[in-house]
Length: 79
Ligand SMILES: [Zn+2]
Image (cartoon, rainbow, N blue to C red; front, top):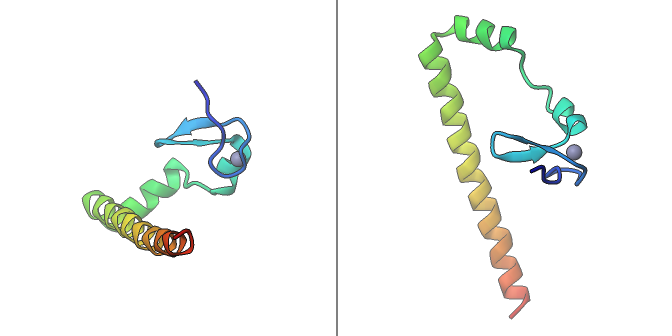
């Protein structure tokens, strides 16, 4: 079952829990396996994995903070 792309609404494919179309996926400029291995070799693979997980956690926290602020504004406006 394919859902609409989270970004543009066109037909998308599941990708790490989100639906995204080919065009928007291309715009993400995802790292190739070769690039990922190159970065992993600069640190150690576990250190690189930890770095990426820390960045993901920061993103989640930041998203929630921004979302809460907007939801708060909306709830005050809709009183
Ligand atoms: Zn799209």
